[in-house]
Length: 376
Image 1 (spheres, one colour):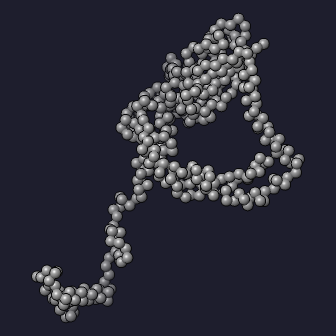
Image 2 (cartoon, helix red, strand yellow; image 1 turned 30 degrees about the vertical axis):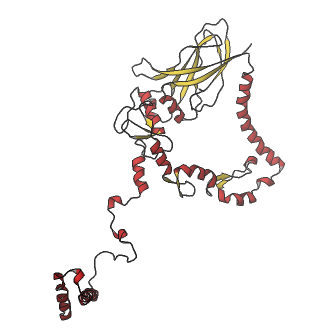
Image 3 (spheres, one colour; image 1 turned 180 degrees about the vertical axis):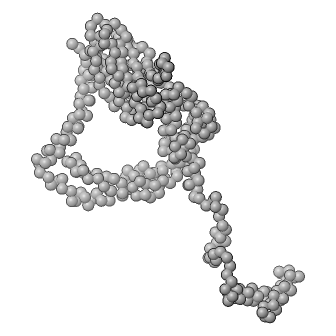
């Protein structure tokens, strides 16, 4: 301990002088003192608390990062750019209320559809300000930011920007689900793309007999025949002498019942020298359609004119020229007379509840009606 005290005294004598004035001997004594203290601590089993810093690591990386800032930038952006309704990142258009709260297109349309069914003003879930297609606008900056955020491919689980994910999953991913090229002759195989060459080299369908292939092709022809029957029927109707069509606009109304129900009706219009009206209802006038996840629209055609004889007609509804709703055409037939001037309610052939919400969220529903008069 005497040598250690002598070193401590030698080092303590230096504070009176500046660091620039330290002589070579003083510096050497200081270095020896520090080395001696470190050696005695190691010999006595004294160790410093915490992990030892890496000598090769830059000093800026040794700084402890606060706990709240340790998350990745992408994770923080997810919470900022997510939809306020479903709390998920938008996949398409992004709308914002007047106070800047974000909503994905699906949730925005759903809010407007619910307000139409409840006969209430739609409001933002965050600030309760009024929202509508006129009051809200798209946020293109958020849409572009979301498209550049990384997301995981559902097949290979690798990270890709959202803007390029669709092309990767359809064309580039080696794990994407694909079908055998012999599916047209009945091969049911489905699997990852990288296994396709091995399967096709061993597929048994190319070696099937003609009788087996004829049975498979016969089943496929039946489904194809059902699809072609609709188009052949439309082509046949186009050969009729009396054909009329018009743009119709369904407007929302409420019934006079104690519990009002939403229904739609068009103004009177003239086709084939007759006056007509179209009516539509939601979920076949279900009491609370806003509580149902599945939503449908059905309509009926009403003849308002008086006729001297029965008027046998075929009719169908198609999407209007300015709407993007997807409607699969279905042909309906009815014989109109003064006693049977209304058709039964028939489903509007829309694909799913999402398309129904688009129609309900709109101010009016614009479609195109075709009527074909059957000649006797």
